[in-house]
Image (cartoon, rainbow over the protein chains, first blue to last red):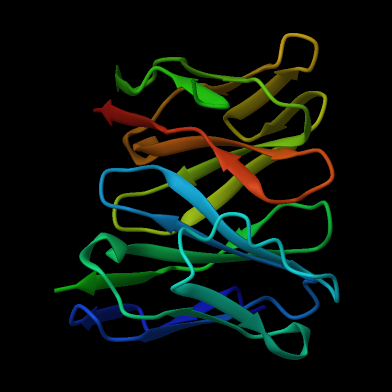
Length: 112
Length: 109
């Protein structure tokens, strides 16, 4: 079956522009996560959606970052007024509750 | 101090060697995950465990809850095992993962 998909795979943008990153989770997975991996750095948690519960936004680095999950399926991560330090690979994962997470291939964001 | 510590950071081995990667954590957890990331590739979940030991092929993962420690073992290592291995924990009451910094493994033929 289809895994987690993300689009675009690569995004180059200019400083100050807004970007939207999309994640399509595995069908039926109630949990969806966004993580970030900066160059040479480890993975860090950004935001977590579980069913109809309020999302856990505790990892978002600033108010320029926001995410939505529509209809309990597709999620969009939006970064407003991008900065160079936002350059990273943004990873989405999905899972059933309390189960292993399946990761998408990531979106590589480069802010010039 | 990071909540999840891995050692070693880098590891080189000859093909066929037995490999151990260690992970220690300082928070209460609901589960511990071992992930694999190939260069330029995505992340694959290898194991999720909350007690005892799990085995899949040449890979073995163990966890000691009392000591807050886990190990990932690779038997009869092969160059295709070369990757970054990441330990992560999901803390109690939440599924979100807290990651270690990873162990970069290179296996030479």
